[in-house]
Image (cartoon, rainbow, N blue to C red; front, top):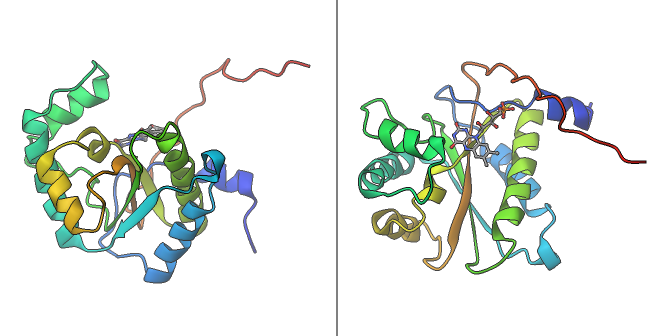
Length: 193
Ligand SMILES: Cc1cc2nc3c(=O)[nH]c(=O)nc-3n(C[C@H](O)[C@H](O)[C@H](O)COP(=O)(O)O)c2cc1C
C-alpha cells in the first residue's frame, strides 16, 4: 500500500553511507519519471536528468572533482564550500560518498528558473527514492565545479551539452548507515489569517 506522502517526507534523510548494491534499472526509471513530473517555470521542461549507474564513471568524476577543487576559488565564504575544497584533497574523499548511482540535473543556461526547476525535480527524486527504500543525498560539488574544463569535457562525453549549466546532483543507493533526523528549528513557520 502506498505510504502517506507526509510520512515519506518525514522519514526521508540525506544518506551519506551506501552499500555496494546497485539499485535496479526499474527503480532508476521511476526516479527519473518523478523528476520530469516536477513543475517548471512556464512549463519550460528545459532540464536534462542524466543517471549514471556505472561505478567507473563515478570514480572518474571523483578524480576530476578532486583535481578541480585544487584550483577552484570559491566565489563566497559559504563554509561548506571552503570545507569541501579542503576535504577534497584528503585520500578518503569521495564527492558522493561512494553512492552507486548519481543523477545529474542540468539545464539551459541564462534561464532564470534553471536552479528552481531542477531543485523541485530533485526533491521528487528524493521522495520517490524514500518510498522505494533507497537513500539519497543532494550533492553540491558538481555545481560548484560546473565551469571546470576537465569535468565539463568528461560530462560532454556522457551526453551533457557543453552549454548546459550543472544545477545539482542526487546520490542514490541502498542505505548502509541511516542518518539521524536533525531537529527542526523553531520559529520558521507562520500563519497569517
Ligand atoms: C541546496 C542543498 C545543498 C546540499 N548539499 C549537500 C552536499 O553537497 N553534501 C551533502 O552531504 N549534503 C548536502 N545537502 C544535504 C543537507 O546537508 C541536508 O539536507 C541537511 O543536513 C538536513 O538533513 P536531512 O536532509 O537528512 O533532513 C544539501 C542540501 C541542500 C538543500
